[in-house]
Length: 275
Image 1 (cartoon, helix red, strand yellow):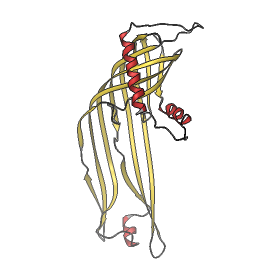
Image 2 (image 1 turned 135 degrees about the vertical axis):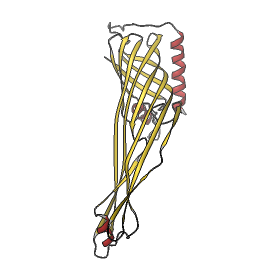
Image 3 (image 1 turned 45 degrees about the vertical axis):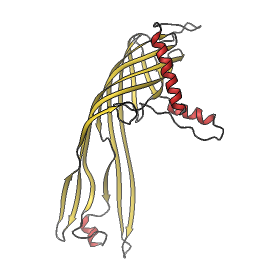
Image 4 (image 1 turned 180 degrees about the vertical axis):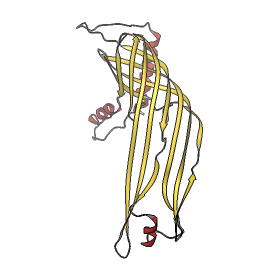
């Protein structure tokens, strides 16, 4: 609830920034430029961990406060190149890989060890290119724009299996049964998605070239995914391999920043450094 109140407040402040005349340059008492200028580069990152830490620090019971969500989850890097004080190109790049393994061990009467390992994998590459415009008064700047997004990889975790014995040995040792399939899990998987997203937000420059802000977006895109599963059967003479295709999913995604896909993400709090 607190996060929603803060976010609505930030967007309201942004609407005030849009309503006023645009300030493109201002200096502090030391003569340092506060706002971004043509030729500047910027790095934008997730401010949620900082907010979580501060919330925990001021918690009466020392409990960890709920973390704010972010469009920059899943290690997506956001960079900007300003072509003027009010326009910038923005690039998103994310390479995400996760692998978890769980081992299960069984023994037969001879105390022979049979180990099956379940591997859960997630791979995702995210690329994005967009443009943003800004207007505002003094340190308060409203931001709006659009971006095109591309995602390659697995949208959901895939599971495959490893064993310390081949199937014939496992049957001979009594761990598996002849004629009964032993799965190797997902042997092949792929997913692809592309779309466009519009966004609006607000930034406040707390220090020269350093701003904190909030952003909300809406996106539409197309996603498709498919996979294959491999099973082995020992018939007493030969080991047979059977490949079956999994469900193929595809469709249009419309997201108002309340989901986990690249076409929306979630409403975000961020911090931006300009150079």
